[in-house]
Length: 332
Ligand SMILES: NC(=O)c1ccc[n+]([C@@H]2O[C@H](COP(=O)([O-])OP(=O)(O)OC[C@H]3O[C@@H](n4cnc5c(N)ncnc54)[C@H](OP(=O)(O)O)[C@@H]3O)[C@@H](O)[C@H]2O)c1
Image (cartoon, rainbow, N blue to C red):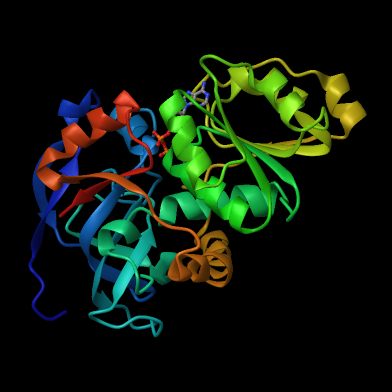
């Protein structure tokens, strides 16, 4: 590998805790395996899962780098012997199992995508985690179809902005919940047919009014237990509830009769531990269905704020304040 340094700056978490638990260190640059691409990282996306990891609740899977960071964009610094899709110098972005808060990342080529020519590396770093998650949960597990109605909780989150834009672009009517009127206006500008402020309005009665009592076909949920009964209430017959997080607890009450009478499907997933082969399949779908929409500007990355790697604690504190609308990105 020509001209590669032997050590690199990383952010890691020696002891779980608050944002101050994120510590800069120097680690060896990873080796590039035969099926891997080594990326010189220009920018790394910050995700809610990184906050959970920092607090000690969401460790990297076995074999993955132990430090946080689920997505990066940068320049290809080396490719493994089995890789023909990328070459040194290409701009690339990647979904990781961990280790994105680092100057270099080695990642299986199945999880690496080109950077659309119209986007900066900072914008590209904000894409992989949200679009892998949104595509697999809405269109694979949730079987969302054009013309259907979707409710996305947390519309201004990294996941929310991606789900609203993509489902709208693919012909769905999207409703969303948010925690402020300002966030509601932001989501409606992104394409949401209506954004419901969950702090001042009941989303069940709002959805009933908005849909003429017909309900929605799919709910993409990141709240979990506390929303479970109401999520089942807003679903139309044969509706699908797809759960991706438990911000409101992991346990809730289920009306089994409702599931039976409405023939509902209740499902969910976690992306990070899924095998490389699954991620390869989602990458193929993203290249076919989503990357052209990004290249044409029909959907766009929304980066709320960029922090230097050394200011990573401030980036986490900002995410925990929930003041952001869209993605937070670290610049290396
Ligand atoms: N399962 C998976 O594979 C997977 C993958 C990626 C992400 N996720 C999950 O998806 C969620 C979003 O991730 P992110 O990185 O995009 O985080 P983020 O930007 O920090 O978003 C968290 C969102 O949750 C919203 N929220 C909190 N309580 C709410 C409530 N009661 N009702 C409606 N919305 C509420 C917040 O909105 P307000 O500030 O307006 O309250 C905020 O927009 C996280 O929970 C994350 O763990 C799961």
